[in-house]
Length: 135
Image: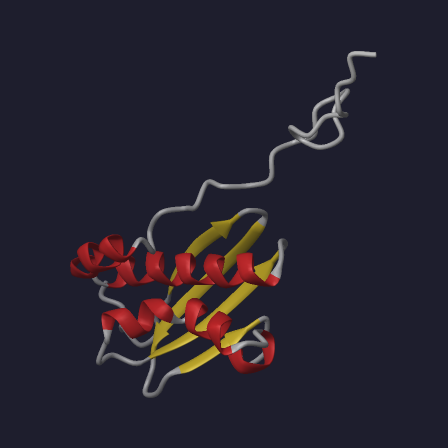
């Protein structure tokens, strides 16, 4: 049984620090992007964050138009923007495997492992300690 490509959607998950984004892309007549049921310009305040979130589409320059629905939670606003980019990149690879080389070269497929280190007992922060005094 063959399904129509217009009804099919592709879902992918992207992460950064504690932010998790689930992107669902569907081929459509025109591009529509919603992040937590908001326009990206309303959700991300700065233009830099908006560009970061949708950078995968800009780098691939796809002629195909997509309806993109993204649910993002956790973390801060910058981490959420990178998580959205990660999720969109993964979904685009499921759509067209030939985009993998371009997206990988840009670094959009790597889940950035850097996160805040846990606090250890006896220390002020993860590595900061009280000043040592000889006397």
